[in-house]
Length: 528
Image (cartoon, rainbow, N blue to C red; front, side, top):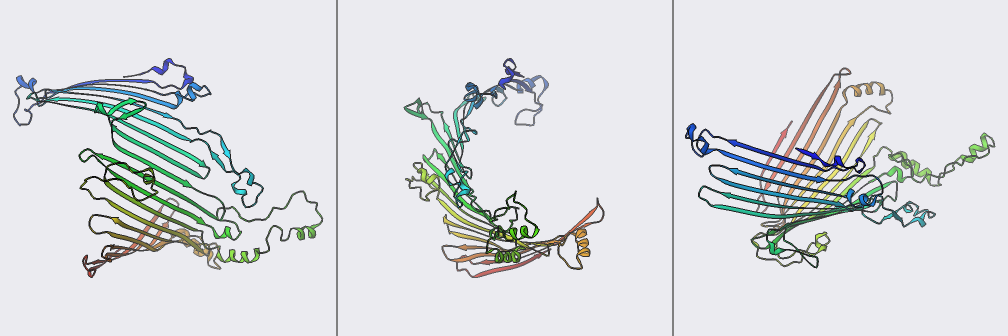
């Protein structure tokens, strides 16, 4: 049953205050005795009955009033609160008495401001040609999103068996989070989040004194920091930088220490358009380095004089050799690149939490005191490279070329440290579409391509595992994948088409001795 108390409030407030209540009761009369296969006579079945009774109540509220009333814009519209309570009683032949009670309080508040004024910093660079692009940069003075949330839960459970042995468990928990998104500039944004989980079961660890606050025992802690930067200084070169650091730790009640986990990564990716660099029209349709357009309203002085006046206007003196380079390289697609570096570190047995510098990933050494923990630390790092481009021939044969390499190595590990390398080269995908330039045969070939739509691909990958402590390979796998070797899509009619795909996969596996690095076995497999 649900009662909507917001019906008694003005509709313009946008309030939602539902109050829900539920009640259930059930009985189960078994036909056989509990934990046996003995059939129970009808006259004593009531002794083996199981009953269950539960009650649930939930209340929540939220407001969404439009306007500039500070009571709503600063308080009611930004908060949300809910309370829930549940209680159950159970009776079974094994546990004659079972009682549980739970209640939960949850609230959140948004301190962000999406329409907060921004401060222009580089307006003075507008008349400077080289710095004109940054004249519109503004500084954010306040976070766009800043949300706080917290929940408190209490649970009580009492169970009694047939021997009158009573087991009681009581628990109080608090879970708090903070999420902040701050757009410092239009091309630089940061995200910060914190989360803490605390056990409030022990009253001696809880103190609400503002000058000496104690909120129980912190069992879990985590934080995340992310930053993205995408400068736009040139039309021919687009690139972006990203950085992220995730830290978390867990409290171990047995050793009274913390086990931390740090993962950090940063990457740079972008796109280089050589046509735009050569002061031509970029593939995206924009242009870079164009001269000024012809001014309107010029008095007409004849067709010949107009041609002389406009001839060569807007083109620099070095445009002819660049035009030759544009003509020779226009069949090459822009180059896309990406580089990524990762680092992870697991440190058990910490007696204290490391500094903020370590939690943000700015240093690899936590520099903390360690206790007696049987678990060993572990640490890894990795790099990844990715380059892709392509070219077209006769306006119909399109080839995508890609190079990928990943390297991951162990810095600290139980046992032997290893390095894993993976290289994909060449990675080709060839598609044949209708030709734009093909003397004499263009109509016939395009008709064939329109019907069959052929496609093929070729990829060679190499994976190697190396023992860093001993300095030799332990395994090597070479894979040549032609998937598809040939793929066609035969269009018979407008609504009927048949597709076919043929692929070939070849792999060469080499295993080496883990003691001296000598070749132990090799295998060659081919699948189609």
